Image (cartoon, rainbow, N blue to C red):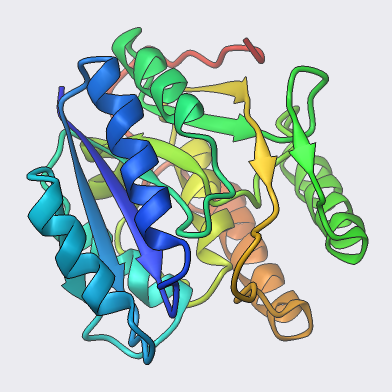
Length: 253
């Protein structure tokens, strides 16, 4: 099973080299077949030069330009159209996600799960320098989603997740063009009946660059996507539910 890592990158010249090289080291050490696909999202700095250097140094690394309008969601959509592996993991360019957790995701896929979700809010997780205002918004949003969908999973909004190729096909087309894509993908997968498990993951605040998430701009977009999928759950009569059975959902491991 070949794993694709999709990394959206907008003006990340200061961090993208270390992020990609750390992933290559971790995956090679574990003998995991992989490709790393970086989506250059209309960068205006030296990101492209760094990506060219990476492709020369690592044979499993390639990059494409986001030809859609600029933005996180569009960049991820481009990556999901271009990845070549049997499964795909979305990883942030700013080194906030731990490469060891990508390995944990892969091992869960090997056990047969179709999706692997991480949670940063578990006793076994390490979170470093999470901005307080974003933490409050994060916890409120995830509490709302948990109550609405009856979930025990407490980190739906985290982009760092892993899906088998058939799941990506089953939840397409992706509607969200912004950071609300991070909730559309897992909620669709859950509502449509794909199996998943949850594992504790680590998160580290970026040390270079600026976060692209703008909370004031995203509230209504998150709400739209959440309610859209909730209506699918209530009214679709299973039209989009995957036909294969049985389903399994594991507790946090």
